[in-house]
Image (cartoon, rainbow, N blue to C red; front, side, top):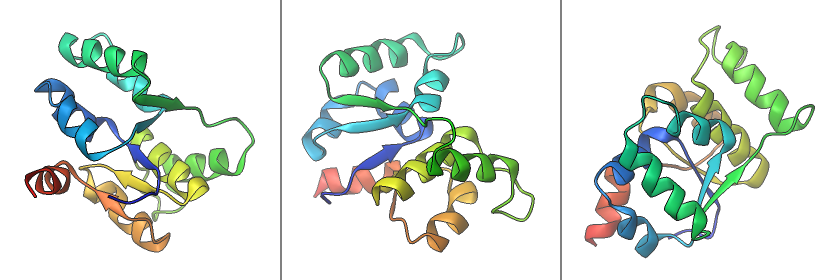
Length: 142
């Protein structure tokens, strides 16, 4: 796999955490980086308990890192523009998607998301590689 940092949206992580597929992630990647807003999404009251529990274990093991987007930083500006729709013809994108893209821009990283309709134009524009659950599973099979 790439040496670039990978920033995960909730939709990709849920696919692994829901089925207790953490071993797959651990086998392929050295760590998982989750924007703070994605961490909050995964821990909402209506999130499946096994998703919350599995995430908590991975954080405790140091495999999952949570990264904040600090106020008044370039990535905060990028994030705000994306959720307000300024970069996408007045079509705001989701908070998690925007956070992963903003952090990938900052760190020259990769975005892991299944929501291609939200991220495709921006990741192409910024030349950010993307990973989906299907792509990760394909790597795992090889």
